[in-house]
Amino acid sequence: MNSTAASTADASAAEASAATAAAADTAVPAPPLLQVEDLRVAYGPAEVVHGVSFAVGAGRALALIGESGSGKSTIARAVLRLLGTRRARVDGSIRIEGREVTGLREREFLPLRGRVLGFVPQDPGSSLNPVRTIRAQALEAAALVPGARRSEEREALVHAALERVGLPEPGRILDSFPHQLSGGQLQRVLIALAILPGPRLLIADEPTSALDVTVQKQILDLLDELRAELGIGILLITHDLALAASRADEVVVLQQGEVQEAGPTATVFTTPRAEYTRTLQADVPGLNPDRFAPLRAERDGRHPAGVAHVEAGRISRTFRTRDREVRALADVSFAIPRGRTHALVGESGSGKSTAARALLGLETLDAGALSVGGRPVDPADPVGLRALRRDLQLVHQNPFTSLDPRFTVERIVREPLEHYKVGDRADRAERTAWALEAVRLPEALRSRRPGALSGGQRQRVAIARALALRPEVLVLDEPTSALDVTVQASILEVLATLQRDLGLTYLFISHDLGVVRQFADTLTVLRRGEVVESGIVEEVFAAPREEYTRRLIASIPARQDVGASA
Image (tube, rainbow, N blue to C red; front, side, top):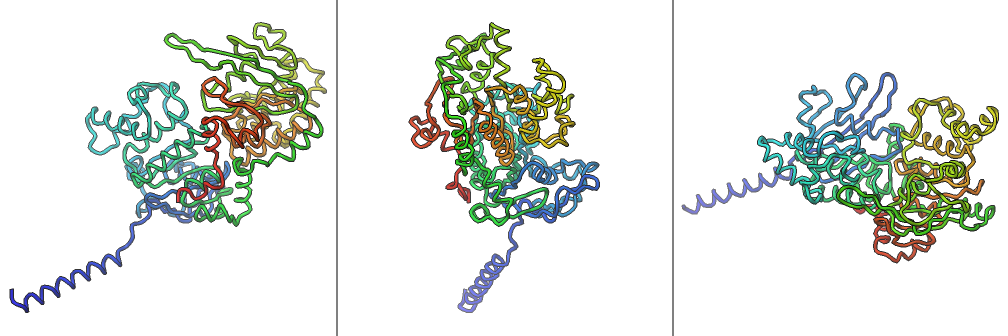
């Protein structure tokens, strides 16, 4: 090649290189995985989502936060096209990887579900078919994977997905029915099924709302790992501002279908502009441990701590099946002074609810003794137990299942008075009205049935029902675990006020140490039926002796977690 030709070739190469560089500089960036613009959703004439906009990029997490009724789940279901076109009208723009999908027919949108859009629903108990094994349901998800036509290929994909989400012994998991697995295992199964077809965007609707704090942390850590390893984008639906702040890059705060504010989590969390956001932040138990301190101080002034009102002395209970024994309680002891709150805390399976059921006379102990006000709790003495239960009432975890759906609110609250033949009709009406006023339930709701009430309203009804007999002791079994943080705070305030005014004694069952730190005076930490440690709440939190307690405390979302995912 002569010098002229070489010079020409060099010039051509330089021009090509410059053209490539220029093309790279002007290349259009990849569109977000999901872009929502001016989204509006209406049911008939009532619009419930008003002009919402946001975007989720690859490997990024955005959280939609707000109370029940704020429109979070409606937005998620609008993106997934699960609202039903006959019931709901959806206006605005929804783009998936740059493609407008609002005008697609159902058969055109269907291939996007699973393969592009994965969905992790809130309640695995109602999301999985209870009469089919996990294997039968997992193989259906594997059928969505392109090229997985043979059964052994699908089985291998399912095993790999279960291992990826940290489930040991996948064969045992696959052979199980949903009721044979714990809540944390079921949630991992749902995540495994969601990621099995290889979606690029995962929509997680309150994926940890009813889980133990340690299991909640494991699930959220798992979602973070999937985001980092696979580049999955995540749309996280939650009512917990602290949780969103520690796990999402950006947040959108919703109230009654409208955006109150949006932006990077650290900015929204540390310098919230909207009053609603500040209210949500104030209601997070882990961020405000002294919220009820003034009420407790007033209580202490009115009702000085007395002798032990409730006592458990070395109680033990073992459940036996055909092939194994499960030790639910082993030499557990605690005492609650009159007018104070004692918490039993621990993960699922720690023995908390077994101890509560034993106190109510619903479990027969193998050893040990329980007493209330000096009276022994003896399931073999039905007369004594009936008299005891007039002064010892239970507030269930889930009021939706514990309240009779056929009865009005007034009848539900009045029923224990009729059962114990308290007074005449006028007396019962007066006591019913007093109990409903004590829990601050509006009079307009008293003729409704449970199905027409919100979760927080139903829980107020459950507390009013327990109060109607004017008992001395309330057993509170996870009374706020499935409620929004704002509703949870209002329920706890009602309970703290009642204790201040009436001197009630509470046994408080909870897996949430953030709530326990706010609400309880003393606590007992249980693990697999055994006492790990116990003592005054402030002292245990300040200097936990055991590693298990330290791990539970470390799972509470705190201010230093803000922006951890960024």
